[in-house]
Length: 379
Image (tube, rainbow, N blue to C red):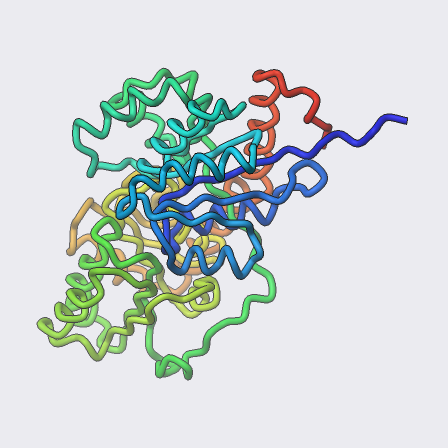
C-alpha cells in the first residue's frame, strides 16, 4: 500500500501590522487552502504588531513577528525562523515584503519563491524599480491581482510577461451576515446612505467624498455619509467636514472587523480610490448588490462595466462623483438594476472558488517545475 504523500508547506511573508485589502485576502486564502494538500500555513510579518497580527493569533495561525524597520538586524532571526520552518513555497506581498522574501529565498534556497503585485504603486521612485529588477531574478513567479499591475511591472519594472500571472481577487458568498441597523447608527428610515470602506490614507481618496457631499446635500439634504475605516487621515477628514459645516451628515465608524455587516445599509457605495489593483472593498459591495460609483483606476474599468454594473466618473472629479451619486439617488430602479448586475458580475468572475483554484494550480505547477513532484497529489 502506497504511503501518504507529505503535505506541502507554504509560508507567507508580509510587511503589515494593520488590516487592509491585501491582509484580508491573505486571511481568506489561508482559511481555504485544502488541508489534505497543504499543511497549516506559517506567516512572517516584518512591521511589528497590530490588528493583523492580533487576527492571525485569534485564528490560531502560526506567526513570527519582526520589525525590520526599527531592528534591521532581526533579518538574521527572520532567516533562522524561515529555515526552521523549511517551507516548500515562500510567497511574499507588497514591495518591502517582496524584496525581503526574494533575498531570504535566495539565501535559504527555498524551492519556490513567489512575489505578489497588489496595486499600481505610483508612489514608487526610480530606486524602488531598480531594487525590484535586481531582486526579481530570485523569484519564480509574480502574481498580480490586476492586469494593470501586470502592465506596470512589464513597463516600469521591465519584467518579462512570462514571469507574471494575473489572478484577480475573489470573495466568498455572503451568507448569514450579521447586519448593523440604522437605529444603531442613529440614522432615520427615510435618510439615504452613501458609504465607503477602506483604510483612511491618501490612496483611497476619501477627501473626494467629503468635497462632493455639499453638492449631493443640495439635492438630497436628508443624505447621510458613512466612512468605514481607520487611518492617519481620519482627523483631517473630520476637520474638513467641520469646515464645510456638514459634520452632522457624516459618520466615521473607525475600524470594523466585518465590513460586510454594514455595507447592506448603503444605498450607494462610493469608491474614489486614486490608485488600485483589484480592490476587495469594491468587490464585496458589488457582491452584496450595491450600486457603486468609482474612479476608473487600476482594474476597476474591468470590474465595473460602466453604466451596467456600476458608474465610472472622471478621475478626481468632485462634480462627476456628486453627479453620479445624485443620478442614482433619483432613480431607485436604476440603483436596483445596477446592483443586480454588479452581483452577477462578481458571481461570474470574482468568486473565492475561482481565485483559489488558480492559486493552487499555480503552486502545484511551480513545485513540479522545481522538481518537487513527490509532494504533489491530485485534487
